[in-house]
Structure formats: C-alpha cells, structure tokens
Image (tube, rainbow, N blue to C red):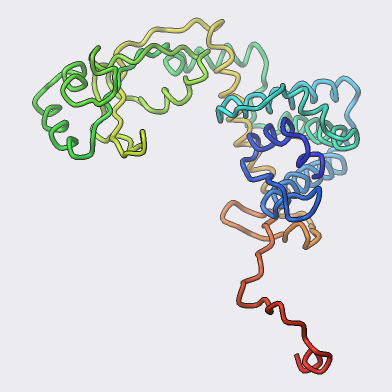
Length: 318
C-alpha cells in the first residue's frame, strides 16, 4: 500500500481498475481507510481464487502462462483507464514496474490462475480468432459505425420539444429549434464514431435500438456548464464496419461477457472461503455487492473524549 500511495501512475491505474480513493492517510506512507479496504479486497479475491485453482484444479502456471498473464494484466489495466477516460501518466507496463517485485509477481500469478479458471468455465467464450469472427458474424449490427446528432435541451423546453416530435419535426428541425449545443447550427450533427473510437461504447449505449433519424422519447438528464439539460441522441446513419476495424471492440465485449461469468464463479468461491482480515484494513462481510472487505467505520465524534486528560481515579471509574 505504501507503493500505491507513493507512485501516482500505479495508483491511477489501480483506481481505474477498481474506482476508489487511494488518498494518503493521516500517518506517514499510509492510505485512507477506503483505499486500504479496496486494496485488501483485491488481494483477498486474488488469494481465494489462487488457492481454489491451485488446490482444486492442481494448476501451477508455466513460464509461458505467466508471460501471457502479464500481457493480459497490462491490457486489462490499459482498457480500464481508457474506459474511464482516466488521465494517467505513464503506461500500464510502467504501473506494473512501480510495484514491489513480490507484489508484481503475485498479481501476475493471480491473473494466470484467473485466466485458467475462466478457460474452464463452460459458458466462457475462448478469446481466439475463430471465436471473435463467429461472435462478430452473429452481432454485426452491434459494431456499425454510427453517425449521430444531438439536442441539448433546457428542462423548460422539454414539453415543447416533445410536442415538436409528436408533430413530426425532423431531427434536424428539433435540434435547430431547441438545442443549446453549438451543433444546433448544423442540425445537431455531432460526428461519426467507429468501433475504434474511445467514445464508441458510450455512443452505442446512448442510442440503443432507436430507429434512424429519431430522437428517443425519454432523454438523459445531464449537467453541463453547471446547469441541468435534457440530452437527446439520434442515429442518422449506420454503416457496417469490417471485422478488421471492429476486432478490438468485439474482443472487449467478449472479455466483458467472460468477466460477468467469472464474477459469478468468483462470488461462489468467496462465499465458501474462510477469510480473516486484520481489522486495521477493514472487516469481511456481506454487502449489497456480495462478500467483500468493508472499510472500518470511523469513530463517531460523540464517542471521543475531549482534550482534558483523565486522572487515574477518573480513568478507573470509566
């Protein structure tokens, strides 16, 4: 934890992987309770999975498997930073290099056992060229290059916007009449996004399955320039993206699907694991997210005595 606190690149990448606060604690070379609990939780998960795979599956990673796990871990960290648009200095490779040798070796071994476990899960999809090609063929429309238009509408204009929709106004007309975004001058045209774009996942989520040239009936509520707006996003054009250009997005989606599968398996392992955590770092318990290390609660101010020292007799009375 001292290494995390003192190395900004390492802290940034870990924060992207599991968002929390790795802020400094009150003591020297220390981390705040939330960060300590989160890091402890990552370690407990790694140890529990490692022990299960080692004892139940008799798995001992080879040098080649450890090398592949290192590349996989670096890729996972890089993707986490990109997904959260985090501004980390340095690369994921440099973040691993900032770990103490024992910590780095443990993380890579944990990654190797996790990969082995996922590979043995029947519902997991192998990350092979054939699987990527097959998945893409079945979900080609999910990787279309999307051209979109937006309308950024004041809450007070939403009713009028809806009335205009009902009257049959086009996306261009609605944006020109109601949008407060600079793109209103061009009818809301905001740009085209291919699967290679870092914004693609968000755009794809925003437009969902809405028809071409149609704003959704229900907007997103966002804060922009310290004010609240209703955001409408419409697809104006869909173009099939070749697999060669969509491959990275397909691979990310497969990893997400496998991660969901692995999460269910992991929760089963943690449910059965016998875990003891030093109270300094938190406590092991059941939260809404499942079993995890929970940050220790701070003492209530009403339970803390004032600065006045107790006399021996008063201390005995207490």
